[in-house]
Amino acid sequence: MGVEVILDIYSGRENPKWSLEKPAIVALGQLLGAIEAKKNAQLPQPPALGYRGFHLRAFQERLPSHITVFMGTVVTESGNFQDSGRKIEQWLVGHSRRFVDNETYKYLESLMQSG
Image (cartoon, rainbow, N blue to C red; front, side):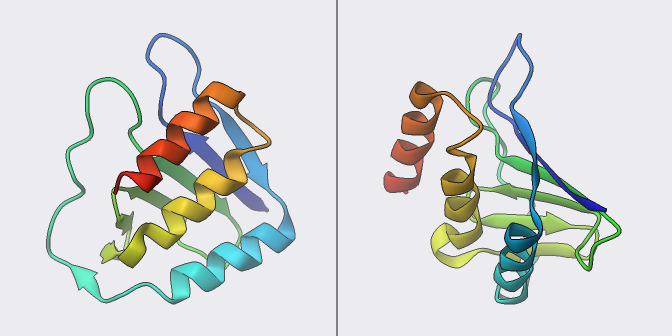
């Protein structure tokens, strides 16, 4: 049981990953339940280097088993969804604070502020 989060950001070294605790899993489920209707657009093309989003794997939770969050789009096995205001992405950035170094966290925060 649980949810593993991988921050896809590094090239040449291991990406940060961590597991969500139960209260965070509940909060994530609420955020996912509030996202807008499906989008037809594909996930935005991530850059070759730098931030490429979050990948989540849920194990025996009431969540999609695979979730990718990047640039205001949430992709699950059910389709693509619009994350208006990048709420889920911002929540994941905030949650990453305990698991990434200060420089990485500041970089992520600057990406969320720049749109």
